[in-house]
Amino acid sequence: MIAPSLLSADFARLAEDMDKVAADVDWLHVDVMDNHFVPNLTLGPPVVKSIKAATNVPLDCHLMIEDPDRWAVGYAELGAYNVTFHAEAAADPVAIAKDLRAAGSKAGLAIDRDTPVEDYLDILPAFDTVLIMTIKAGFGGQAFIPGLLDKVRAVRRHIDSGHLDIRLEVDGGIAMDTIEAAAEAGADAFVAGTAVYGAADPAAACRKLRALAEG
Ligand code: DX5
Ligand code: ZN
Image 1 (cartoon, protein in one colour):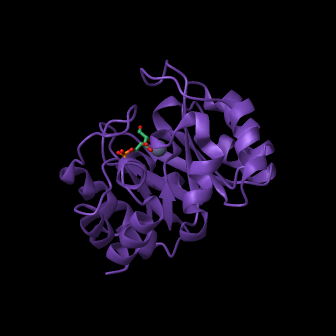
Image 2 (spheres, helix red, strand yellow):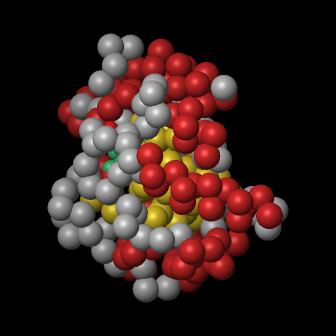
């Protein structure tokens, strides 16, 4: 799965930037930041609603917000395909996952740079997606941290040994020179912001990323 991050698109020309890549991607990654969980502010429900109406590509909403117990389900109700919230911010992650599925979306659990995955392996069956940050969440354009692939390997082993039906997504610094390592570590969904929208031809960049990930 290739999921361009709209964080690196032009927010005044979102429809145009989404159309550029629509034929070459699986999901559009929508980064919701609240200026509390991370020191950056992006967009919220009204913009997600408009994005949903403007594209047929499934939306992969990545909530970098406090209190997902209260707010996450609203994104499912807006028609997001997948809603991923941060483990660090959630009081009851399994309850949120249930709410998301009941509202008709997939449920995703995100693990930030400094959080070990071991604490969460037991609850993974409640989820459809696990997102391993390969940077510290908050900003696009940061350098990929190769050491964080150990977490991808650990989750991959857990998924495979438990025969779990879970997408293993990586987010942060995914580009032409890093996506192969992430795929080899076991990721099967790849978010890329700068590598797509910083490219002269975003659609071609998506095709190239996919080819590299497929090896
Ligand atoms: C950052 C966001 C990412 C960001 C990735 O916290 O979660 O999705 O857009 O951007 P790049 O690909 O530039 O690292
Ligand atoms: Zn993201």
